[in-house]
Image (cartoon, rainbow, N blue to C red; front, side):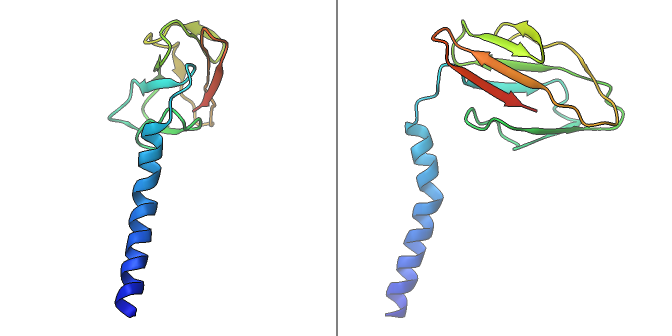
Length: 124
């Protein structure tokens, strides 16, 4: 009986570990989702979550104290989407304006509007 319960618990653990990944692969991304988001400080900055996920809309970026300028490169699922990075419009795959780093926290908002009028907002 103990072996059965142990095997049942192990099976449940495996299912909970692999089910979200399987469901994520089946989920179609909205046209307004970003397929990637990079910044100009990959070696001196830490972005959490560490891997970009189009369905996660809030990220935390910390950079080294000597970094004074940060830019972002958002790439959208819909190449015709309009991307607004804290008030400045750019095209998918273009580099954003420069954000001057200070000791105070800042929020960069990336708003994506697809051709079909879907909208997604990411915060960093």
